Length: 270
Image 1: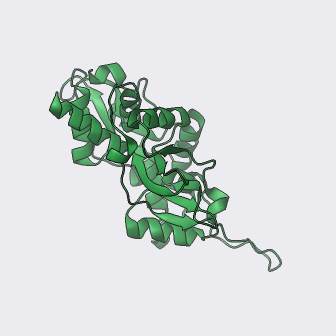
Image 2: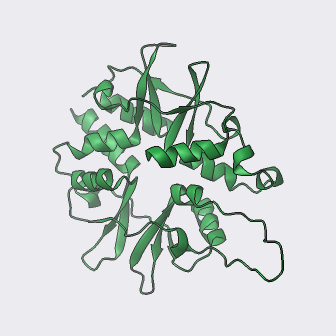
Image 3: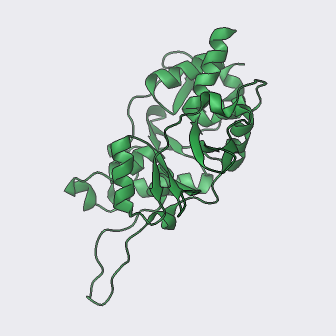
């Protein structure tokens, strides 16, 4: 299978000078997680949900004081843009994505050639969902899962994600059973103002995990096929799926990188 067979096209674009607020609205409207940044019809970077969430959560005063509609895309976007040929193999694409720890590649006809589309991790997972492979979820899952309680504060969640260097946390209820998930997308699209309301009689309650988590939580059994888990991820338009045992306790997580590595291993074995 070649990159051109599974790439995303057309590509949604934005210019460097447009505000983050418009980028966020475009992502919501089209249910996408990234925008190609172009200047004079030339790709100059990529803007993702993670870029927005990471930069807006920074503690520097200049970010806190600027409304989202006054922050230009160029201050937040990822400027390095890696390309791949349309005729490259899916295995080569998975290798590039993993080696560079990125979520997408620009598909171009040679150096400086015309842009054909982009290939994303989501495209790769959709491809993997159609592969015939006897790979169980437990074989490729990560057994480390960052968790928070449903009543934990937003600041606690952000601190947890920062310390553990993760892009998602599983939300647990009393008894330790999973009830939801919080990702960079939840944080990006649930932006709240930290400015207190005028007047002393109104007090806003702090945001807690259950206020912003995605629910119901999509899970897969540890002995299920990884390709079936990929199907569930594609259907639910999610980037990871929690692996549970027979008691519905969390035992691991399958994310896009887990499946990219499986694709990579399959390519090396062929």
